[in-house]
Amino acid sequence: GIQVEQSPPDLILQEGANSTLRCNFSDSVNNLQWFHQNPWGQLINLFYIPSGTKQNGRLSATTVATERYSLLYISSSQTTDSGVYFCAVEEPFGNEKLTFGTGTRLTIIP
Amino acid sequence: DAGVIQSPRHEVTEMGQEVTLRCKPISGHNSLFWYRQTMMRGLELLIYFNNNVPIDDSGMPEDRFSAKMPNASFSTLKIQPSEPRDSAVYFCASSHTGIEQPQHFGDGTRLSIL
Image (cartoon, rainbow over the protein chains, first blue to last red):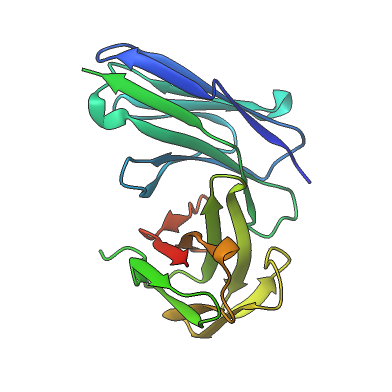
């Protein structure tokens, strides 16, 4: 099956800093989604982004499908951004099945 | 709009007991997914349904696990008999099949088998 690797595994930043999280995948994908798991365990869908760039407030994401990677940018970090960020991909003909990466744990220090 | 609703939020039971987890998907969504999250294995898909029909159950660990979706607004995941290694957080997610349809997750059920 498809392999999904995320980096870095852990990231600690001061409030106000910017960050870039990376997701590499080993094969072509139908779609790619980014999720945030907050400290209470809730999984929130951030972006549905099989290709191109999307922005939502301080967050933006870019997927370069031909090169098999996606980036999640967080600008002006806030403590509420802390948690684990997952990328998940759907293989072609995968019938909506998502394979999750191992996540990047982000800690924002006040 | 109500999101995906899971119950119970927490379940603690002794090994050998039957456990039933419940999920109500977002109204209008026609795909439903059950995931399990553990420290060792991360997030893994157990089974998913489309239009109430099980499409892929290859992630179900063993015969002790079963899932049903009797109608568009309700699904259950059952473990019988339960074992300590089943302890995990179980998530249900739903989506609407089509273009640009993200998966939306419930808050999960934290299951502890003693």
